[in-house]
Image 1 (cartoon, rainbow, N blue to C red):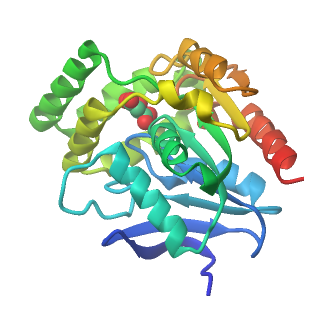
Image 2: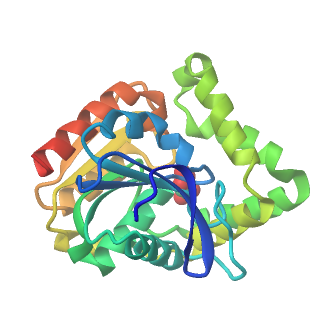
Image 3: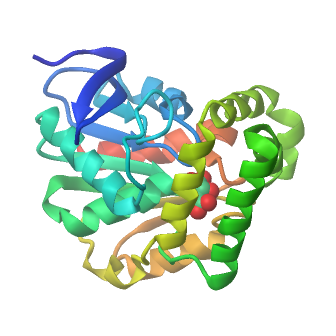
Length: 273
Ligand code: MLT
């Protein structure tokens, strides 16, 4: 029997996972995967926009929000396995995935391994390349700095890079919400996730095999996964659509939800008409 509502707990891969599940029984399913180190609440405006016509699920990735972290190391493979196990537990054969940044890494990994389980893909502010040597160095330095200076300092430094310069003065509520999500993530989970990014494999070489509808969105001022990264994925994924979101940095769904939702709704209604 399906449970509808927010902060529902389920055991997946021996782990308690927290998720929101809204919308009609039997409606097409859209699953949202958040970025790092945030949680499912970052999708509230998208869930609200779609729940009238679709079944919409947003869950907390292992170690984030209200989901447990388990005992071992994290990896993008493990995060993707958790997603597939969640779909199995919820008896969802097929769904559309929408992932932002880390959520996009997870979505690409899942689609690569299980192409038959997905109807369409929304890749937002994400990338298909593995970390460069320089990026890997930076991950290690960040892990050290978090150990030494704590998560609050990490949150302050992250916010400058996450948001577009104009959002830093216009999006106070969103910034406060993001800060809250970051500081509520444990030091250990943040470090384990950074290590998973360090180890992450590229997915660019398999993009040409994707044959479902793909919408790629990116904030015009995304400094973390810039528009060039989105353009590169767009060129590799046959028939994909690329949309650059104005007035947004890395958190395009929070910084410009109107444009983000309008592209999202257009794609969803073209797939599930
Ligand atoms: C994210 O938003 O998920 C992260 O910025 C991803 C990353 O650091 O690679």
